[in-house]
Every structure is written in structure tokens, then in C-alpha cells.
Length: 352
Image 1 (cartoon, rainbow, N blue to C red):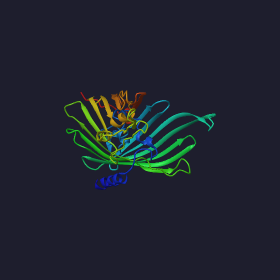
Image 2: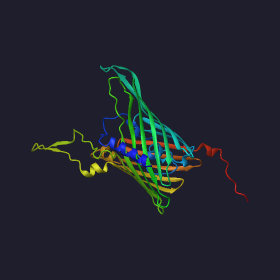
Image 3: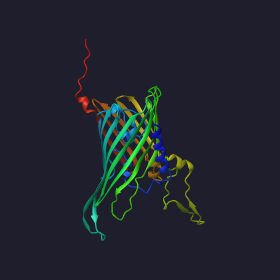
Image 4: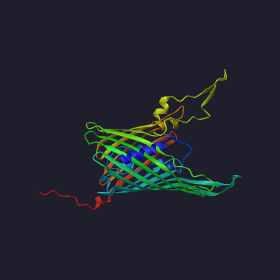
């Protein structure tokens, strides 16, 4: 446990000065097609239960209750952009719990043209990742986990290969207290093959984050808080077109100021699950960064908000999620999970 925490600290110090925009590749690794993750703000790392989907984001959530679970997720973004996830989880008593997952984003079909604007066909673009994760319970309260991601990116005639990884530690109290917490560093890695020979190898954009959740024993809801990008406090963006304003009478130039609260709040995702029973739950989240960056100045709508629900029907876990990035529309996510072994288990009949 001490060695694992030290590894996290080393990764944190390595990337503590890293920028988060415009200097990394394979940004699709931060997206998830999972309906539950989408409904809870897009990043969700601190609830310890039998759902294998959050474990694709935080491997320290892998546990034996997910044994033999398979899960499929699909998402429809805007235009022709779509994505999907698939995973299989297997637990071993002494070795821990392992998960194999695949993730892809398809950016659709584009019109190809030469430098003079003559159309000469079409092309496609997509990103893929194969992930192998491991989680292990070190004692009654703590789990550790790590994973490795093999990345393949194809953009028109250009291809790139890379490797990335995550490392995490999580805490789960007894059910009476209902507290879970997690600390993780994700997506640290680099390209192995650049898109072109003239390119320099670029790192994968890393992130260090903390998550916390609390399930209240006498109330049907769970509060979930995620703090992203611990490695960098200020990652606000000033649009150069709107950052400067000129007074038409005096000609005085004013630069838009970003307040401390604006910088601080953008790290947070606040979510909640209303758990009415083990078979039905409602979900809602507010992503402060998404709200600040994607809303229109005169019409915010529900940008930055996300919604969803979960159902347990017979042997299937079904989840649906909607995430509002912009007033132009929502992304829609659907997840179906099941344990195939449940179909072959005979129901126990009580004796008269």
C-alpha cells in the first residue's frame, strides 16, 4: 500500500507543471460511452459497487462482485460522431480482479478535397484503445489498481500508435457510513509512432484527480464529488476575440478578468444518485468546467448538466444517460450489463 501511494505521488510531481490543452494526443481517452458515467458528469471514480463501467475509468474500483460481468455501451454525439465501450471482468481469489475493455470513437465520414477545392472522394477518422486493468483489495478498506492502454489512431491516411496507463487507490468504509474516496493519476504515456515522420513524439495529456461519495443510510440518495486536474490550478481559457473590450467613447481597453472562484470551481463535478431501490435509480450532475466553457453568453440553457437513470430488469442492468455540452444538442448514452453465468444458474427452490 505504501509503495502504491508513493508511485501516485511520483506521477503527480512529474506532471504537476503540465498544461492540459493543446499539447497532448489521444484526448478521446478522457471520454466514456458509459451511460452512468455520462449522467454523473463525464468523470466518476469514487463509488464502490458491482458496476464494472466506473472501473474502466478507475481500476482500483475492480472487485470480486464484478466477476464474469460483461458490459456494452454506446453513445451518439453530434453529426456523425459516435463511440462505444465493451468490457469483461474476471475475479481471482488470490490475484485480484482483472478487466479487459475496448473503447472507440468514430468521427464519421468526411469529404476529401485538394488544395484547389476539387472534391476527390471521402475519408474516415477514428480512435481506438484496448485496455487491460487490475484491481486488488489490500485490506478491509483499501483497494489499489492500475491499467495499461494500447492506442491506435487513424485519421485519413495518417496513423499513430501509443501507450498510456492509469494508477489509483480507493477507500470504501463499511455500509453504515457509506463513504467512498479515490485518488488516481490517469492517461500518463506517450506516442510510440507519430502520425508523420516529421512530427515529434507527443505525450498523452495526463490528469490527477480525487473523488468522494457519501451514501446516506436513512435517505435514498448518494452525493458524489469529483475534483479534476489537481496537477494544475488554473486551466481557464480566454478567447482572444472576446477577452478584450474597447470603450467606444474613451477608447479604453479592458481585459476580461477571471476570478479565483471561476478558476477553482472549474475543477469540480457535483453529482447525485437517487437510489429508490436496488432496481431503480435516477442520476444528475453539474460539470462546472463544461458549463463555463460551452454555454452561450446570452443563453446558457442546461449546458454542463447531465441526467440519467438505471434499471435492473431480470438479469440485465440497463442505464441511460444524457449530457448537455451545448445548446445545440445532447449526447445520448446507453449501457447494458449482465453476468452470463446467471442464465445457467438454477434457482434454489425452498423445501416445504
